[in-house]
Image 1: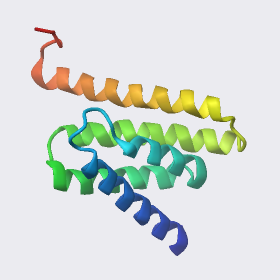
Image 2: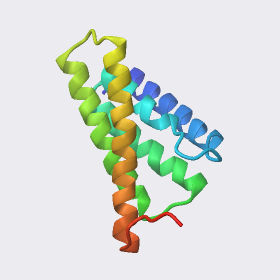
Image 3: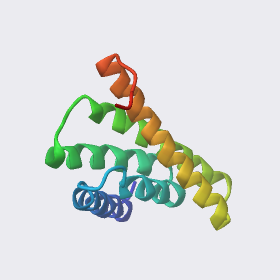
Length: 128
């Protein structure tokens, strides 16, 4: 990994942390997932996983560290790995396919985080 790639990953991590901090008052809006998808598609799976580690650790230093940090890293790493493999598999992906893939990744992230909430509390989610 060269200096250019490391600098680009650091800038993307700073952008993701700032975006997560700015949008922290809105529920379920995280630009981190889309930044990790773009990083995986362009720079590869290793860079996306490194971006995941940096973003989760640094943003949770600002927003609060907890057991969910591990599962954020796991879910974003899987998204980065899938994006990196998709980027290596095909170079010219149509925009509607990328849109559907991003929607799937957003739901996948929410599903993993919801499973960990169930694991911690031991209760199903119920409406009042």
